[in-house]
Length: 109
Image (cartoon, rainbow, N blue to C red; front, side):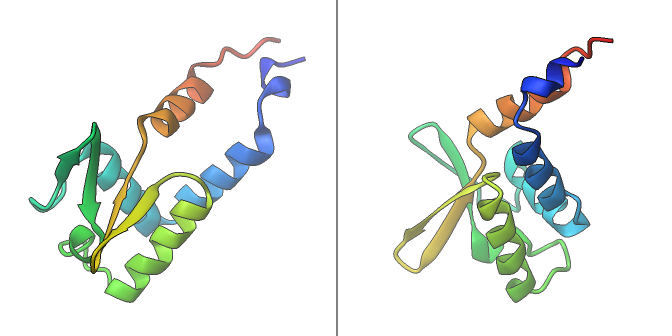
């Protein structure tokens, strides 16, 4: 029996499914590591980037970026909010801790 028997495997499967697309993974990593194109802002302890500027140097069409961000949001990997005409998105520290905890969980034989 494994300690993973107590883990929400269905939830993690959805997370990994969302991250299995190379474009979504790039977008998630960009948000998670805060290394955007200079449009990264900090507010209330959250680091976010405007959706319209997020993939400007990734060679991904804006409509494709929006689709991928929708999938990341659906999987619970990012949060979004509208600020006037801007849509801002960010990765909460809690999701990064959740992923780190999954990989730190020891496997019992």
